[in-house]
Length: 228
Image 1 (spheres, one colour):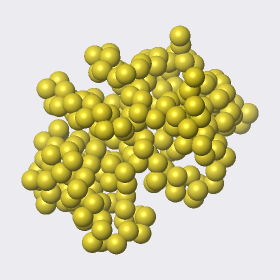
Image 2: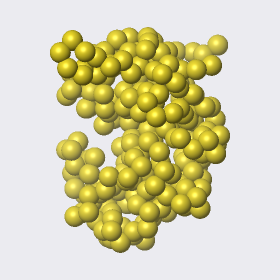
Image 3: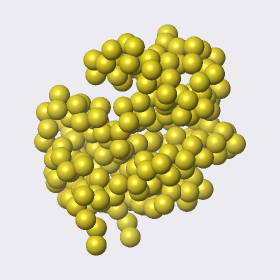
């Protein structure tokens, strides 16, 4: 039996819809339940329009449900203010996106350190932690380069380093191999496996069945629901 302390993500009856105009709404999530334990590696899968990206955004505290309850590491984030949600997100969640979202005007160290800038961390500490995070993903040799000087795989590793800098318990990845060739994608998945072995909880959205099979658990979605 799962102990409450083992559960990182506890969702019950989660609903989300979007306004289309006066008195018109598009239901996207239709009251789903989900539990993720510390140390899980989850692949969220489903066709376009299934609700997986909306669910990912709620899991990562980028969006909120409009029905149901979401406990993240025991904290009820269902109805938090934007400011409180931003604080929780900065502490507990790291993000990896398909298109990297690196700022071209900043070098790799500065990109990786950026989340700590918004948390008010000193420059000296930001730089030290950025260097540690880059070493963790084997990218120390690119520390002073700009994103446009990196390969696709290097940009994704820089993005992963950025996601790890606050040492969050949860990594949320949106199609992390979707913009990479198969060989480079395999390298990124190896890095994810290494992070998972170190105890990181990973929730990954992917449309690629071969990538999804590498997770410890696959969750399939269709029409706003989790399918058996």
